[in-house]
Image 1: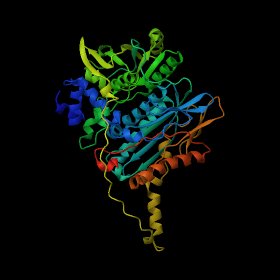
Image 2: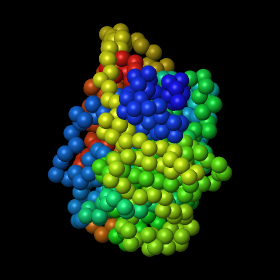
Image 3: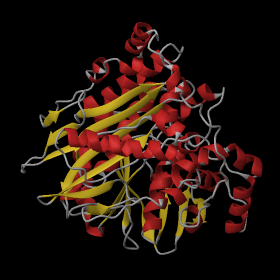
Image 4: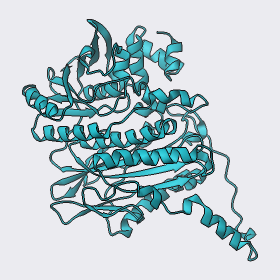
Amino acid sequence: MEFENAAAMGLSRDEWDLILDRLGRRPNLCELGIFSAMWSEHCSYKSSKRWLKTLPVDGPQVIEGPGENAGAIDIGDGLAAIFKIESHNHPSFIEPYQGAATGVGGILRDVFTMGARPVALLNALRFGAPDHEKTRHLLGGVVSGIGGYGNCIGIPTIGGEVNFDPSYNGNILVNAMAIGLANSDRIFRSAATGPGNPVIYVGAKTGRDGIHGATMASAEFSDETESKRPTVQVGDPFTGKLLMEACLELMASDSVLAIQDMGAAGLTSSSVEMASKGGLGMEMDLDLVPAREEAMSAYELMLSESQERMLMVLKPDATDTARQIFEKWDLDFMPIGKVTETGRLVLLKDGGVACDIPLAPLVNDAPEYDRPQADSPPHPVLDSASITDDAPVSAVLRRLLASADLGSRRWIYEQYDSQVMADTISGPGGDAGLIRVHGTRRGLAASTDCTPRYVEAHPHTGGAQAVAEAWRNLSAIGARGLAITNNLNFGNPEKPEIMA
């Protein structure tokens, strides 16, 4: 491989040189693809990690903070709330229905991977100007995709927000949140344990959809955006439901040592993260990976983002029990490798070694940047004195009433099933969503909030206002705030004004 190949995958010259230094040789195609995916902004947070580390993450109720598939807090009565919010912006702009649907599917898997049964969904959506040529198509597709996946899998959508602004004409924001409930002493994590323990692939088969989706999600959009449609994953909520039930049943059998959703970067991120968190290595035979297409290369198998798949490490004597459970749910179950002590990722394919690289450079020693910053041009100050008593109030009122941001959202949230599971106390349209918690006298409330124009005008104050607004919405229905999860959508980090 040459630098031109690396550049096509989103790597810089410095990063290419760093790969050569860490490996002591040129990577092959599969290895380069793995580095590209793991070093993408989407997977590595290489430009934002230093800032995210400054956020408060500790508290008496915190069971699991940043670093796992989702956060977890103790809500009493032996229960934990598992929750996460995540963006699926680029895929939804390219193919709105599938982009939004797989955003919902992915966030649900992050939650039940922790051993929690999902109980609620929320979303936060941003679209361009209502009269823009793409807005109607994108809005309709995204709303249908969210409803299509959430309704089919049987999880209520209890809240959300939708805003319009011309700044989103070129790239919409589609953020999906999921909440689940688990026993506070039965939370599952992703760190691989026990050299020699079997590594198991479960769920749907692997295809060529979504290859390099993580890299695409880290790039700026251009006029060639439409050509990226093949990088958008295709979701199947029915298979997602089967996978959820199978995983939760297996977890109840005390067979699972570690488990990870195959999300961004697919088999690459799940295997690398599991082995790295455990301080171990992993060896996999890619010829054993269940594939729905013929002649898939090691590069394709590792970077496919086909949906509804999991990777897990099981206890050595639990394979037969696990196989029976997944066969009952009509899902693929295949031992494809083992945990090792080498600290390396070794991939076998067609009788040879397709990849043999150290794990440390992929995760713990991955590049981390302190990007330059530059203030954006100041916004003009509104001169309140210019608003006189003879201002055309009626015209202003008509303009406000015609604004899409002030219109009812009922036509949107009525497409989401907010009552399935029969636990919803307060659904969409109010200050916050609220569900009852079975076996207790408790309710669980959640809200997603932000006013982007405040953030644009003054990022620090706008960020604080977003937290305060969400907190007020919880307070308005009588809830006490316990934790915050953020989902920050920013532009190209290589632009100094973005990092400021």
